Length: 178
Image (cartoon, rainbow, N blue to C red; front, top):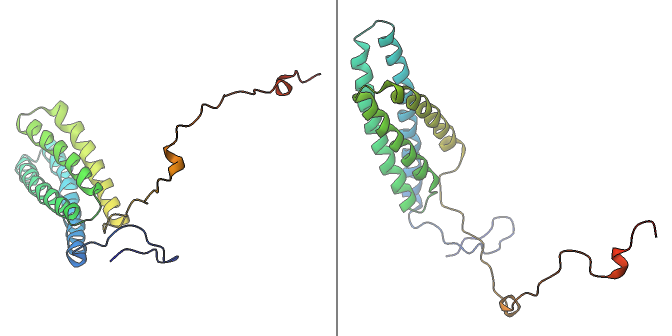
């Protein structure tokens, strides 16, 4: 079965996803986990701020939040990989991979007490997670759009002649006041 343009009825050259229900459910799961992951990331500066404000018990909450964020990031990575494998869009996988790499560095920097790296990386991750959250809810996560097919004609295989960049006729090169 070929996909057809809804308006024109023309063949788009693509094939529909094999498992449309699984693709929809995986897309919904991606949105849910991205939402939870974003909430977890947004809680981290709150706990860090409480700790810096003198509530030393908040450091334990910050550590617990880091663990929860890391687990959610792993789940998000698996779901976006599944989404791409089912024929869904691939950009959530690329974005999640980038966020997970940043979070890994963030976690290690925090564990080692490298605050000069931990804090700016955390600010960047909060922004990236927020942007990813908005994007997964804004853009469709369904099947990738097929690329338009291009036909090669016998004329396309000929070597093109070089075309001069400027005027070649003597009349075109006359001064304007002549």
